[in-house]
Each structure stands twice: as structure tokens, then as C-alpha cells.
Amino acid sequence: MQAEHEVVVLRLGHRPGRDNRMTTHVGLTARALGADRVVIAGAASGSKKTIDDITDRFGGPFDVELTDSPRRVIREWEGTTVHLTMYGLPIQNVEDDIRRDLDDDPLLVIVGAEKVPFDVYELSVYNVGVTNQPHSEVAGLAVFLDRLFDGRELGREWENATHRVIPKETGKKVEPVEEA
Ligand SMILES: C[S@@+](CC[C@H](N)C(=O)[O-])C[C@H]1O[C@@H](n2cnc3c(N)ncnc32)[C@H](O)[C@@H]1O
Image 1 (spheres, rainbow, N blue to C red):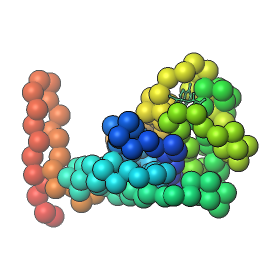
Image 2 (cartoon, rainbow, N blue to C red):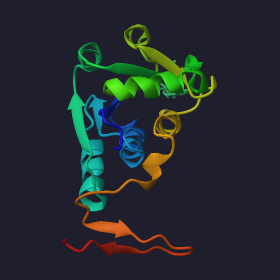
Image 3 (cartoon, helix red, strand yellow):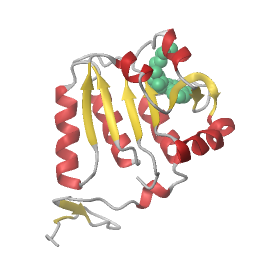
Image 4 (tube, protein in one colour):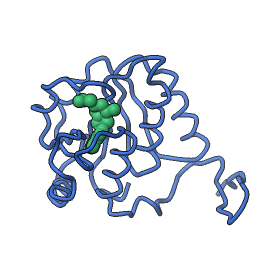
């Protein structure tokens, strides 16, 4: 987004069938709230297709990748890694440090599905709680990204959209985007 360095979301633990909707929502939330890319661990081709279709229609840039080796993605990440977990340090205590790190390096934001293996906690530079209460990866990711970008993501420009929403007080309006 406006950040100089890439922000990538890694979605761990996708269970085909059961997690399809949640994984799709992780990707859509990452896209809408300013991340550059989502990497999904596991067989999530349906989620990838849905997120890609939304990007084709409403704009990007935003990329979706699938991986069979999420640990390798974390181990080989050349930058900062943040694992979102209810057991982590409160976001309000670490957000300034993470924002400063993003000035220098790309950022990998890791979210889980069910139980996240303990080595992910050890491999991550920061384990961050959006409250220390259990909730959801979609909610945690949304609050984290909004804090990271300080709300600037809400006004971002979208490129190569075929359609855009015209905001209305009541009702729904979507119109085709004219070629420049
Ligand atoms: C439904 S939770 C299950 C987590 C599982 N109980 C565990 O211990 O790993 C799925 C994901 O939501 C995210 N999450 C849930 N609560 C959170 C919180 N308070 N702060 C940050 N992330 C949270 C985490 O990324 C977590 O892996």
C-alpha cells in the first residue's frame, strides 16, 4: 500500500471444506485493508479463485499464492515476522516498534486456523495479541492492519478495476470503470 516495504499475510492451517469461507475472508480482508499479498498454506484453490476474481473486478494490486511449505516461508522471510495470537504481547504496546520495522523491512503477518504449532511462536519476531481474548483470525488481522497503517489504508486508490462501488446513503450502486 503506502508502505515502502511489502506486507504479506500468511494463512496457516487451512482445512479444506471447513475453512473455505474463513480463508477466503482472510484473503479479502488482507486485500481490502492494505496488505500486498496473501500466502495460503494448503489446498485452497477455491479461496484463491474467489480472491483473484474480486481483485480482477474491484482492483489491486493484490496477489494470492498457495504453499505446501509454510514453515519455509517463515524461515526464509527476509524481514519482520508477526504472529497474531491471543497469547501474544498487546498490540498497543508493540505497534510502534512494528511500524518502525516496516520502515526498513518487509513484514510477514501470520494468522492461524485451529491450533498453531509452537515453533511458529518461536520462529516469529513478534507474537501479538489483539486483546488477549480468543476471537478470530479475520478480526485480528483487520485490527492489526488498521493499526499498522494508522487508518491510511481506508482511503487507498485501486488500480485496474473493471468496476467500482459508488458509495450511497441508501441502496447499492456499482458502475463500470471507464478506460483512461
Ligand atoms: C480461532 S483462533 C484458534 C487459535 C488456537 N486456539 C491456538 O491456540 O492456536 C484462529 C486464529 O485467530 C487468531 N486470533 C484469535 N484470537 C486472537 C487474538 N486475541 N489476537 C490475535 N489473533 C487472534 C490467531 O491468528 C489464531 O491462530
